[in-house]
Length: 391
Image (cartoon, rainbow, N blue to C red; front, side, top):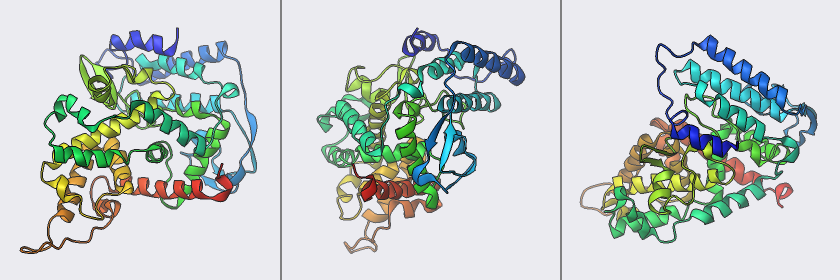
């Protein structure tokens, strides 16, 4: 049975879609590990033993990899000129960590063991689509084009946004126009790579290396290692980003249901494959921006037309942090808008000169993630703009 076919049945029964707190009758952590080991043994018995291959590490040579970066290459410490890497085995180890983490923090990992087995069996580094950051950005844009909202007025088909004013729709249109492939690629780098600040360049370089050698399919299989939910893929989506539970739609699924009549995305996060992830990323970003515009109220959108307030960087940082902490991102943006759309003093029309959104957020709850997104954006621009990486 295909992964999508298996999950269609399992999720409908709630086996994966609802990862609730385990009861006293649930397997213990040790029992969960035993089950995990048994399933891994079955996978290794029935799958071809692909083994490690030697790879030229290119511009990564001499970089120092942290323990977290070693998840993707098996290299911990200084990167050699050439390294033997088994991407299938590394992926298996990441899913082992994922299941262990789910059990540790109270998630129920047992129902997704079969899903893990299916996703491991689906990945074969010998038959992947090898790519690079330039080509992957183009792929993302093609996916966006398939779900791009043709007219911003259609957002009113979503009950939560039915009463947005024309002025609010005008702001929504302006913000939505800045959701492009570069924004989503940066968003993915921020989700996948643990690097930030001066090390962001290493994360971007490694992302490109993985595309070229492990293929874009690897990113569709990578689990999120630090939460208790079924979460995986280039944007590490959970059921809160895409899902339809008991006729309650979440995140991107809201837009897919009301605007696209359920035609653009699968029903459950576990059924996501290939470009589904990029389509969902655009629709989730649109959903979060629509919520922002709604929360800003009818007066603020017009004031935001003030020069220097809206920028591509600000929108990127908002959609990335809204995925991470949606309520905190809305609050931060609202505070930012209030600070720079009101006159500095009474009886004057002079506005305060805005600092960047990332600088404004340094002291709030999304500050660290906003700064990480900013540094990844700078690194990605430098990488894709450099002559040696131009296609």
